[in-house]
Length: 335
Image 1 (cartoon, rainbow, N blue to C red):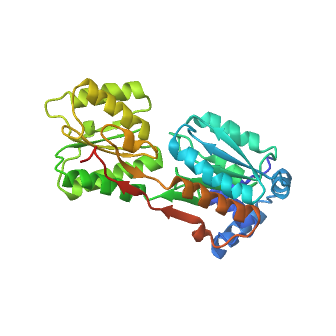
Image 2: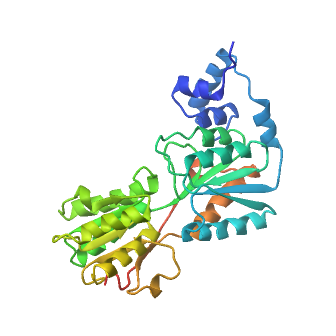
Image 3: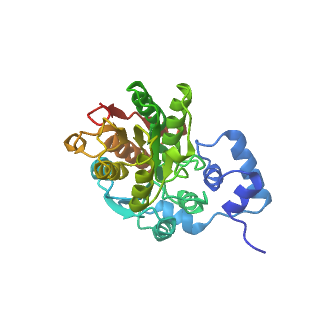
């Protein structure tokens, strides 16, 4: 007879694997009623815990892993600075793993962590069209895992993120107040939760001001070349957009290039506000209006939560979910 697993219990009871794991460990993070239900089912099903997972939780490597999509993104380089500060103060080393936004690469990294190489993981998940996070949930059964920036709602674990929806709403509203009549939006994919939040903020600002939401004005693309073609097509139209909210820093530079190619002046013909953590925004011509995420503080807060868990100094689960405010800075590109 096949040995029952935590995933089997989770599927039967309609909860996540991490919820089952925490309930079986009598974690404060799970309600008493849920714990009783899970423990009762586990006893009935003759469930026995995985000794490898238990031993993995008890060993210490004095190392944590940070899994990110793209280290060239200024947000992640700044977040790493905050993470390293906290790790050093705890006398820990930091291993950085870059997924290049590839889910399979992320899964391979998490499989690698099962050898006990790290005591905890900070992760900003890769683009995941199937919305399957078993590898992260399985890891959280063994060692502490904290999500940051790209927070997946279905994962019941601590997180640190930013007020992406509100910031995108305010950025869009600023362009409307400046007289923009048609605003377009660019991002990687609305499957990524943080991009979806920014897209929803953009849409709701348009709705509030009675402006139409045109499908052709929502440009989702994972390649700069394809993005340039789509933006070029949009901006060459007689009824072209006169405003842009960019959810991706590097895509904004592509728009600057296309405007230069089409001899469109920023902000005369196109006003731009971008989510961006580049320290060089003020040096662009014209200087770039930005939504700056508090990257260093995100990294610092996420690693502080992780070390509370590693050191078993947990507080209430709700206090481990943090949303930080972005800073909007208006410069020449939105005039």
